[in-house]
Length: 148
Image 1: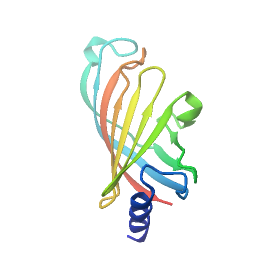
Image 2: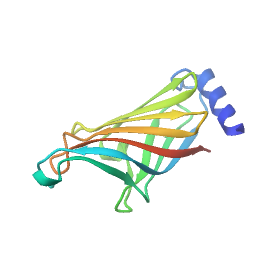
Image 3: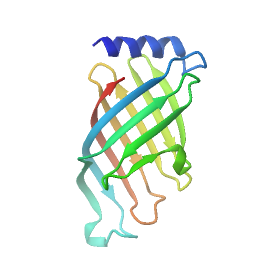
């Protein structure tokens, strides 16, 4: 609970993570939920549609430095470590009265929207990868998070 109050105070005081903000890391674990896969690329017609989905070994960490600049580090389903910024992504962070939101925009049109609820410490992740030529899908996933 202490970390929730600390983040709530940080978010409330910093606006959209102004330059005076302290550094922050939000670490989220495995995710589960649903995805809609579009036919095409690596997805055959008979596999298109809604399916239960998730990343059981996945980890996602939003890091915001003391200048208010963010990046998202992740371990994907293959176990590969990645960084949104190193993959050409833009990371935007926004505070909310009882939560924290971050948005990732990638050059291929992929959009990821994370909404962290501070009361439950769960993040809802909406991911739109319709610009990906191999696997075009839309997902809504949930993960547990902690703040460090």
